[in-house]
Image 1 (tube, one colour):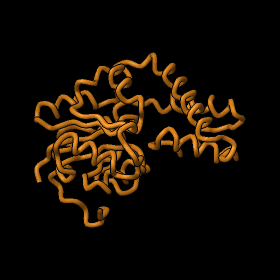
Image 2: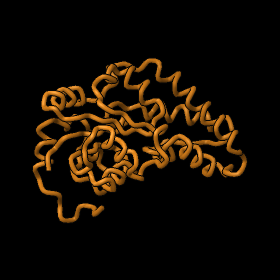
Image 3: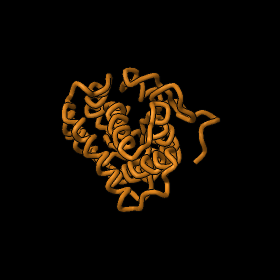
Image 4: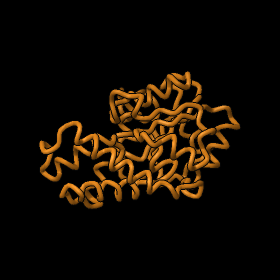
Length: 227
């Protein structure tokens, strides 16, 4: 099978705004009497805004205290605060190894996609100066199902015009790795606490064109997830 595309998650792979998400959620939760800490915040990694809010309300014992309209207002409040915090974002926030890898992918004619549950993804790419480097971007506004459902990666593959079996997905969250594997793509995990990744790297600094080439040329492990 020919290697034709790489599809990236955004937060934790291209840039890291996790601390900004945490601050915005912490302030939003505090306003309704719920306290969250970094340990709880780790549970929000890789899931959508409304799913994150549902977990926060359940954590605070207020799952039934807010109707759909009130939840929408809380989510909008969090997003507005997150947008304020993003105002200082620029190219210095791109994670190590990513600019060189994007250059190499372009040189070798490899399609580049983005699969992010963040509705702010276009704004973030613009702030980083990377919007033009991506051939197709998918965010939560185009989806019915969030990760770990494979819909986001299948949508990205379709948008790029490649079969999932021709693509590598790169993620830093377990829900993302599960979604990549379920899609039929080959998975690269960033971090040391992910299960089921075809290739696990400690950080984005270890990503390179040669690294992905070598991974693609290596047959999948016998114990790799079966889709």
